[in-house]
Length: 262
Image (cartoon, rainbow, N blue to C red):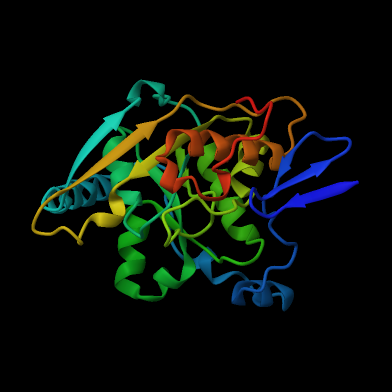
């Protein structure tokens, strides 16, 4: 027997106490690149240069961006001691604005390699800027194997992979149902996921010329448990984020299931 509670977005089974609804990437990738591969043509992203180490260009661009953002925001960071100083790690945050990656990077001493929606890379200038900032494109709405392989390479190089488990920003500020890609990568790489909450980044320009206070909270790392499924790890991650966010931003993960533990 299975029950679906619309208000709480959980599925309850007789043989599994709770199973909050998460979206699993479909097996179908409808991106133009998938058509190229089906026709035996190489993925055009293979022709672009992506790096897996920190670069002087990235550091200079981050320093310049930090100076610009200091005009519109002031940052408060808690929990920095939880973030590993070395080794592969996935940084997973809630997502409310296209600018979230900047406070994420400003808060940490290590470079963040992050996925960005492929549409942003169509502009040649933006393409160069994002790649300089260690970003790489992902086609949303399908199982983009190129992006997943590239993300795995980032972790194999011992770097920090930044991800937004929801897959897209939340215009309502509340958490949306998450995809399982973040958890799948952590399980395959056997690396920790460090949850991060971002509060206030969506108010950057609404309060200008007054500066916006952005609060970053870094939470204790989550290691995949032996035999843990991507779905279960995704739920554990998202409820951990929800409990650290203001109530108005918890979205579909507002009510923690009975018996839930991190």
